[in-house]
Structures are given as C-alpha cells and as structure tokens.
Amino acid sequence: MLKFYYNPISVNARRVWITLLEKQIPFESILVNLDGDQFSDEFAAINPLQRVPAIVDDGLQVVESLAILDYLEAMYPTPSLMPSDPGAVARVRMVETITVVELQPETIPLTRPMVGLEVAPQKLEAAQQRVTVILQFLEKLLDQRPYFAGEAFTLADIVAGTLVPSLPLDSYPRLRAWSARLAQRQSWQQTAYTPDAIAAALPNIRAILERRW
Image (cartoon, rainbow, N blue to C red):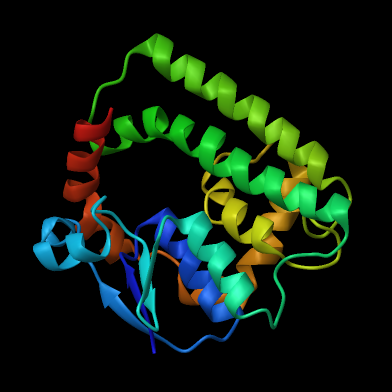
C-alpha cells in the first residue's frame, strides 16, 4: 500500500492528501511531527530534503508535491484530474506553477506577524502588492468557469485551493465562489485544519519561519 508522509498543517502535504482522497487511492498515512521527526535518519532516508510531503509507492520514493501529483495522475489515471484539451492543460499548469512558485513564497512575510515575528514594513508591503497582482490574475483566469480548467475539477483547483482561500478574497467574487465550491467537497472537509492542530503547530511554524526568512 502507498505510504503518505505528511503533517496536517502543511499546505504542500494537504494538496497530496486531497489528491489521494479524490482519486480514492488506498494509502497509509504516516505523521511527521515538525518538531524534529523530519530530521530523523528514517525520514531523511526517504526525503533527504527533510520536509513533507513524501510518498513511497511499491518501493518508489517521490518527494515534492507537484512531482507527487504528476506521479499519482500518471499511475492512477482514473478518475482523471488533468484535462485533455491543450488550452485547459495550459491553465492547469499555469495555476500550479503560479501558486507554488509565485504566490506561496509571498505569503511568508504575511504569515510572520501572525506568529509573533517581525517583518520589515517595505517587505510586507511588497509581498501584499505581489499577492494582489497574482490574485487579480487568477480571478481573470477563472473567468466564469466553475473550475480553472472549465467544468471539470482538476489538479489546478487542488493546488490553488489549498492556499488561495486562506487569503483575503473580498475583492475577488469569482475566487470567493470557487473557494466556497471547493469547501463543499468531502476531500476538503476531511483535510481541513483543526484549531487544535494549528495551535499545537504554532511553535514549529514560528521556528520554520525563523530559519527560512
């Protein structure tokens, strides 16, 4: 059975978790506590980068969330989470890349004050401006579609949907409606962050942010 190494407050792990549930892939979940488990020799043997998520499937080790999603789509193609239309494929890839490469790093300065860490005002303002540009782009890209690729729910919605709804969306009615649509899915409800999990994770989140930024 596929082994899924995760932490419930990890955005990167949650997108893999949702994909496993949406595809109804049997898996064994293995909790990696971020207070030191990620630095253990056992986990480092699976992911030398010492971060979640990671999977081991029939002896194959895969790390990095987008790579894992591509593997799951190729290995377990039904139900499909990737469209066949070239234009829709391009939208999926754009949303995935923009979310992970552009948007997610910009949320780090915004998160620091929430855990009691300082951030330079100019860096905070720059991050807020960049986030605004990205959200405006995603709002326009979504257009009147229920999902980013059209009528079908895809990996684009999973990747963006595990991050975008946590941001202020008052000025983005299409993204708000899309977020509400995602929240109705069983996979979203099953993987939702609990207040207790967030409270327990705050010291570790603070330590991670101190190291990385």
